[in-house]
Image (cartoon, rainbow, N blue to C red; front, side, top):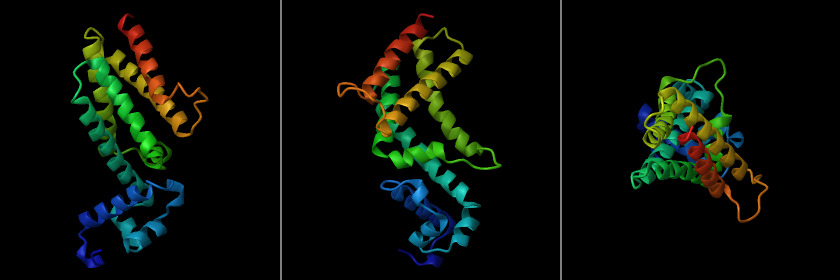
Length: 199
């Protein structure tokens, strides 16, 4: 590892965020602290606070990295699919797979809250980017739908898929072996989209 003075602020930021994501591959965020993280990267807690503004904002920056990773993985899957319904299915499966493969990293996206502060625009733009993908698929599926309808439907789909991901990650689907998270997602999309297209 480079000595402290060898890291620029940008390099240190990348180092810290990389360490956070590596930690979350095996342990939950509630096992991590500012002091523990500072020790891992060889800097003082005060240095990390000066760099990110607060521990909450540090975790928010790590979550931004996670959203970028999810978006990139979804993008890779969807570029191989032309049919809009299959593209939406690919989106949902990719999201589900990430939650299953990186449960702690995925969970902190929704468990972390910034007190007395709004979500910054750079974070909202990442969230909007994911919803835009869903809405674009919906527009291709039902070209005569209006934007307000697609906006709501995209949130309904996300909420349902997210719920399945949450229950599957916690092993609380309470279903037979022949039923799993992905088969439930497929059933959801088939029936919900079928109804929506004909409404």
